[in-house]
Length: 102
Image (cartoon, rainbow, N blue to C red; front, side, top):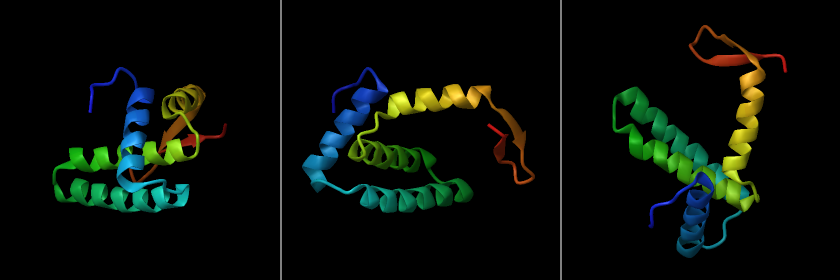
């Protein structure tokens, strides 16, 4: 795969590979696969394993899901981060974060 210059280009290249390799996939199939990949990532994090490939798998499946829904991930992330930056956040007891109101 050629080196890419933007997240949008990466998304496009990955989706093209997914189509060539697996054929067209419905969003629900990407969603199911994402659940499995997230679980593998959690196992790697909890077990001290190599997390980089598992994180990459999650992004690869997410890009496929976004593409199958016609969502440009780069634009969606930028739009969502603009919202997140304006929100107030609190740290939960379990160490996660939750936004307060909208």
